[in-house]
Image (cartoon, rainbow over all chains, first blue to last red; front, side, top):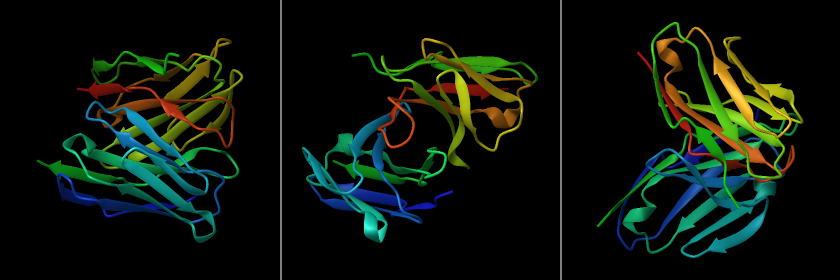
Length: 109
Length: 113
């Protein structure tokens, strides 16, 4: 299956700072999703982004499918942005999602 | 519209028992997948159901099984529970198989003692 690597594994930010999370994948993909896992464990959809750039408030994402990576940008971070961020891509032959290990973001007030 | 609903939210079982978890997908979604999340292994795929048929299965022992009903609701069952089965079990709902967006429920946190 597809290998997904996320970096950095941990990120500590001061409130108001900007940051970039990266997701690399080992094979061609037709879509990619970014999730934020809240403290109760639910995966919250952030972006469904096969290619190009999307923005949602202070968050934006860019996927460059030809180079097999995606970036998630957090601007003007807030304490509520804390949590684990996952990217996930589907295998071409069986559609199951392969997840990265996640980036744990801690935003300090 | 309502999101993906998983029940129960929390469960404590003893070794050797069996457990059944339930997942109601978003209305109109026909694909349901299950994932196990543990601190050591991360998020791992268990199985996928579409139109009441298991379409794909992850690398888990036969103690893990599931099914999907005609209304697309799904259940997963774990028999002869082991301590290592303690995990967060997440269900994902999609409109169709393949390149469609997946939406997750709140999960069922299973503790085996």
